[in-house]
Amino acid sequence: MKWQIIRICAGTLILICLLLTLLKRDRGPIIDGKPLEKWVQDLLITANPSKHKEAKKAVARLGTNAIPWLLKTLHYKDPVWKEPLISVAELTPLIEIKTIHRWANTYELAEIRAGGIAGLAELGKLAAQTIPDLVEALGDSEHLVYNNALVALYRLEELPFHEITNSLNEMQGEHRTRMLHVLRNMKQDAVAAAPELVKIIKIKTGSNEANAAIAALSTMGIKAAPSVIQLAVSNRYELRLAGLNVLSRLFPAEHELWTDLKSSIQLGHKNEKEILLALQNVWGQADKIYTSLSNAIFDGTPRSCEAAIILMGVAAKPGNAYARKLEKLRTKTLKSDPKTLQAVLKKIDAFKGAYSKQE
Image 1 (spheres, one colour):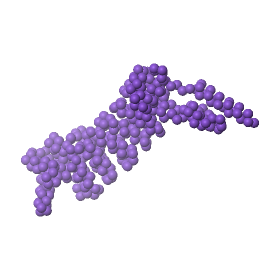
Image 2 (spheres, one colour):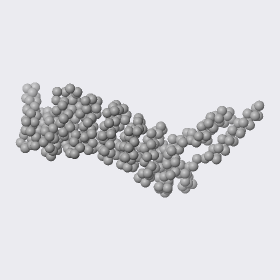
Image 3 (cartoon, helix red, strand yellow):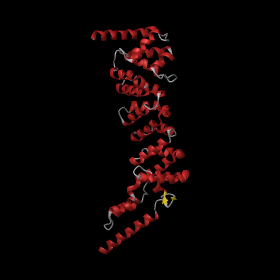
Image 4 (cartoon, one colour):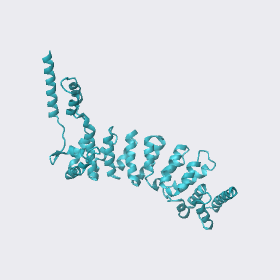
């Protein structure tokens, strides 16, 4: 009986060795005596930085010829036979479990996939054809894999835009959050996605996805303003605050206005409708987006001029920049109804009177 068990164990061991030998994984073209798989793993952030330079040269030598193998590696999964074979081998008393897993390579799956992505990242725009695969890799469960996919897509700049926006609604959770991080990296090149990002913020308020969408919108420049205004004038306070926070990044010169609005505009404020309408009239129109309130006053339409004066009046306090600008408008001929400026200046004068009494 004892010898029978030994023979079974030995047979199992031989079978494992044969299978692992016959079904050995393709490790890629050989460059300077080392397979491409080893070279690209030297590009990973977990590798020794001293190896990066030589690994970059190795990938550059192959160029686009490396893409088929790198794609294969990106999608690498264990063959179907491996898991049941490992289960059987683990029951064999003559073999240590660590040895079994080392032979079967179960500890390196993430590094294999990440290595393929790192190689594609090194090729940069030459690997543009692999964008769908890299976007898919953002949903990988292993952080080493999706972090390298982010790096690869960052290097492709605006090229992944359509692939991401076309599948943005199909993805959820962390996968979509990482896609939004890529859009944030594109900055103004991704502004066409602003309406979709606003939808995500409205539906997923407070989630990682919504926060990533807010961060992306904040980098898209003033052309994103008409979409962001939809948040700023929402009847939901959390959306309104998110919109004002983004506007404060898109138009930092108006920081006093945003500070005042964020601290004072609550649902039901007595001047709420007037202020929200003014925001729409200055920054809510896609055909003309003003770089500042002053720009809206002097170069805009009668409606934008009036709206900008109202907004300046909201943040005007004795001695601050808005108060000084409004004072200078007394002698200017403006496109707006003179009564609008008169009302705002009257408010400033009242502030001055109250301030003088306090002194």
